[in-house]
Amino acid sequence: MLALSKIIGETSESVSAKTASPASIVGTVPVAEKNNRREDPTKNEKMSKDIWNEEELPDEIDVVGEDFIHDTRKRPKYDVIYKQNVSSQDAYLGMSGKNASSSSCNYIVVRIYFPGATSKELQLDVTRTKLVAQSEQYKLTLSLPHEVKDKEGKAAWDQTKESLSVTLPIVRNEIL
Image 1 (spheres, rainbow, N blue to C red):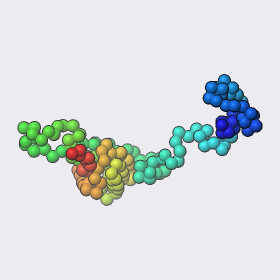
Image 2 (cartoon, helix red, strand yellow):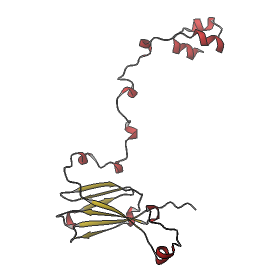
Image 3 (tube, rainbow, N blue to C red):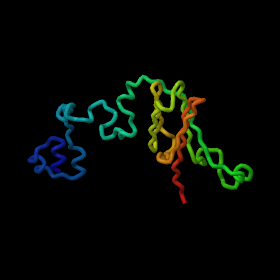
Image 4 (cartoon, rainbow, N blue to C red):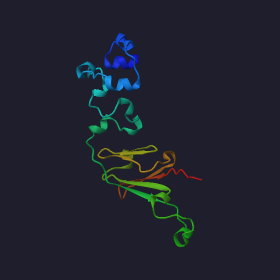
């Protein structure tokens, strides 16, 4: 009752003088003025117009960095291709239950086209959820559609097509 009286602005003497029951409180609670309950906006962090707190910001691995905002390099053309291991039994008899959807695929192949680049000037960084490939003129930051085994991936440069092919095994959480 004392906590309620502090909220509505009554003194402890007036509370002890009244006999309070739930039915009697309903009709007798005075409304506090708006000016008495107003808080200083500089003290209240919730009053700011931010849409998230600093604790809610993504980890460093998910953010490219401040240089990304000011990076004027072009985004190269790229293809994301799904790849699966298929045998003749899968193709002709359909015995394994595999289908053409990405849920049956074993690998993600990202083919990135870097016109005018050489393999020596390319930089590649792959994590379980991101791929960053860059040259002097191009930069690609890509969130991968599936979690991958980044340590088991392979990359190959094709000089005639001026493309980098990155093959990454997909992490599958099989339900037994």
